[in-house]
Length: 285
Image (cartoon, rainbow, N blue to C red):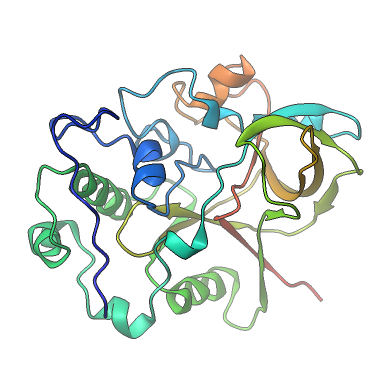
């Protein structure tokens, strides 16, 4: 396999990615073309989908993905952040054979840093450590999760979750026209269509030299929607959104509560899936 190299960042880097700080993964994704967005989804624990960096600005525009279920109506305008990723310069999924030939373990991090030619104090190394740590955390009650390092392993996880005889379908947010600006106002232009399924798997991109998806499913209380959005700059997006109906067990520091000005358990929280995320659902007969 051709190794993917992440360039090192000097200590005086103008973007503030000094080696002695936690990685600003949002900035890394822009500077080094990492396939990463710090998505927030059904788990909503502090270790997972709150801010990945303690020094990130509390007014981070990428928090603009949350809304309430009451907002799901034609004509409603919402500020939404869509990060555009250039596929030609971003890491790609590798084959199962290639993925199985490379250790994927926090215990093997020193070997992996040498394999990918990274210094242990680099922001890229810290990003890898973050991903491996998340993938090895214990499950929450009612949660199923898996870090997929290949398309084949992600499909296997989906079929194991829904049942080996169940056919599955992948849903994504699609930009019908390339976004002009990452953050702009979008108006719901058609009646949102609810996708009625008993269980949903959300797969979210994680920072790594090749594509890694954090996939998980949480029992109960989720409603899935297809949402047609029209941007103020003429952009058109066919978005996938999920509404989590029970937020009582979420971390109070989750950014969704700050954005929506609510507290855990008081109201459903909805969010848009970024375009590089995948939502798996069972095909029902």
